[in-house]
Length: 591
Image (tube, rainbow, N blue to C red; front, side, top):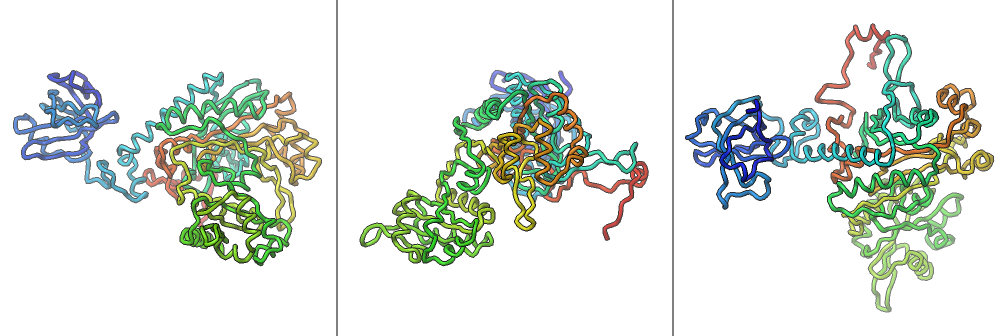
């Protein structure tokens, strides 16, 4: 017989009745029924009920068992009485009478219970993550993650991609976040960096003559944590292709992701039609470049209805160039109570409030109510209602100013309205490609032109586009949004040195600086670089959506806390003096 088990804790069935078996696992729960002990024995695969009474030759040892002790038992498989069958367990028709036992590992008093659904502080869960990971939900999440990664690999290979690995120790490269630097022992005063992404390497792979690359790549960024972002490292499906257009990239990645969500989405609907929405339309309609299309609300610009109107606040705003008034339709939100709640929401967001109009049945038919309706009059109010397609029982909320100043709040308000009015379809995955990102923006204080988005994207129109107004230049850059999260980001790359130098020149970077910062890639592009493009999809966020979790730490095996600390391994930690001497470093006290 095997030293630890003949079966896992999910394999026994009625066909095994009468057999002597050996199981190993953890004591999940002990129940004492008047001299008969019932123990739920758990391993990674499932649960089996094992029992003992005074007739068991090791009953005195079994009586000492406590939760999370690791044990091995030998016993005889018995059929449960029909009235005691547990249909929720694969092994629910049988139990094992214990004839021998070995305690493999005792557990001290537990800082958190594995059995049950008790909530514990995040600091406790992360410090004792190995216990937290024994819990059913996290076991399920980590298995899901592993299965998703395996399925992604199969699907990429099926599309003739090959997996190649890129360096983990490399040069510092600005990717929009802070690098993690690694001091060099052999080159005092110099530092490597952990890659924020394999961006430059995967482009160099295309220059090297390979055609379809992918890898499940670790990426390292020193970022502030958020619910949907790890503060230190994450994994992405990284891919790149040669001789492709933007649509070719979409056609390659869509079946991979759609297939993953269909396979692991638990029966939730996966939209087949993935619309392509320009960045400017996305922020205007949804207040964000990662819209949740499960929410049907689409915001509209309604400035003309308020120009010269009796609502002085908006009328004066519109006298200033660049200001707009946007409306957020709220179907079925037409009550003063709901409008007051949304007004309170706006105040919590730091605004004075939100203007609103709601429509209700009146003595002479439909009437508009609310302060705005009284100020702008019935004709303008009716024109607003017709533009927004609203009726009795509906409402609309209004925000004004420079769009960049209020779009994010408007987007959050749209989300709250959709959720509170139950307009958002929670049982669905809705995807949208966000395209035509502007490459440049102007700093309002200094007037300086700088990059707004990825500087390595090929400008639409090539070199000719860069000879026009920079604020009108868009790139072949794209994101994929799903249910309010950015899942994919990518671009058709700027592979022409002359276009790259011109693009950086507009943002104030000379040719010498470009060569210094991106020399490896610029040099390579001088030797017959093919047109190429690709994207990267966030593995952690994909699994978070599939697992229906709101926090990314629920799908990462060993995550950091909010302060980028590993409480379990006590990292970051202070180096010892010998390490600092080897690296020619000295730590300067911050006191």
